[in-house]
Structure formats: C-alpha cells, structure tokens
Amino acid sequence: MELEQLRIFAAVARERSFTRGGQKLYLSHSTASRAVSALEEELGVTLLKRSNRVLDLTPAGERLLTEAEEILNRVEALREIVVSGQ
Amino acid sequence: MELEQLRIFAAVARERSFTRGGQKLYLSHSTASRAVSALEEELGVTLLKRSNRVLDLTPAGERLLTEAEEILNRVEALREIVVSGQ
DNA sequence: CGGGCTTACGGTGTGCGTAAATATC
DNA sequence: GATATTTACGCACACCGTAAGCCCG
Image (cartoon, rainbow over all chains, first blue to last red; front, side, top):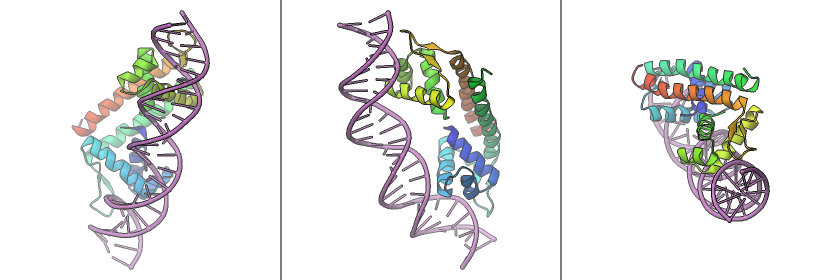
C-alpha cells in the first residue's frame, strides 16, 4: 500500500467520481480507476459500489476514507515537524 | 513522499546502515542510499550523518524516525480496520 | 444515445541491481 | 586493505494517457 493510492482513493471517494477525483490530482480517469482497483485487490475488499449511476462507498470504503484522511493529514504534519524542529 | 521511502528510511535508521537496512527489505544498498537521499532532498533536510564510520541520526532524522514508525504502524492497523470491519 | 467506468495498447520514465569510484578507519 | 556509501550505467518493468469497449440510465 502506498500513499499515492490513498490520495487517489480519497479524492475519488470525496468526488464520488473517478473522472473528477482523478482531475483533482491531474490524473486521467483510467489511472484513478486502476489505482482504486489495485487497492481493492490488495485489501481483498470492495471499496466503491459501481452498480448505480452514482458512485457509492461500501462500509469498508467508509472506514478506509476516514483512516486514509487521517493518515494523509498526519503525513502533511510530519513535514512541518521534521523541517521546522516541531 | 511515499510510504516506501519511509519504510526504507526507518529500516536504515534502525540498522544504522544502508546495507543492512536495505537487506531487511530485500533491496540493494544503493537503492536504500538513493531512497534516503531523495527523502532528504524532498524535505530539504539532512537525516543521517555519514561523516563517521557509524551512521548517525540528525535531530531531524530522529524526529522523522519517530513519526514514520507511528505512521507505518497506523497503516498496518488500517488494513485490519478496513478488512475486518474494525 | 450520453456519460462514466473499465480494459487494451503502446510509449515513456522511474527505479532497480551490478559494478566502479570514493571515503573512512 | 577492508568495509561502507555514493554514483554511473543499462535494462526491465510499472505507470500513464489515449482510445476503444461496455454498461447503465
């Protein structure tokens, strides 16, 4: 698992769209789709329901989004801690 | 910044050696060296003192090691949370 | 049909290991 | 001189975007 995958998943989940989520990170929709699929495969869990017209989070997806956002925030904070001597 | 960089830095820092740190992750010493250099460049901070025979952490390196280990543990925990419904 | 996700395909860039150079004790 | 890090070099593979295919309203 890599942070880039979490960044992409979070963007897609927030936007409820691969196309718009990818755009937020200057990536194509296909790249966003592949990144989320890889994450699902690695975890062995479905994160997004694609059945409907509108993209929806599964319960596992909800949990991942919460955790991922906290981790990503923490990584951002890490930069400051390291560079500026906390 | 990516988790792989943090994993490599943490391994190298714990082992006090690029060679042994790399081995822990089945990577060559040169790969470990490059990964840490890239991290230092991205953060604009020196993380390891290479001057002496023995590798030493700078204050920034100490802070990063602490933070990185917590983040990496949290990512490990995330797997369980997502897969097993917390 | 239209909008959006997935998959195939080809090209490019990143990242690896080997090996050579450099440095420290 | 032995051990360890850095750098050069070539190569393989991973990843991206374009575009085609599919599915659902």
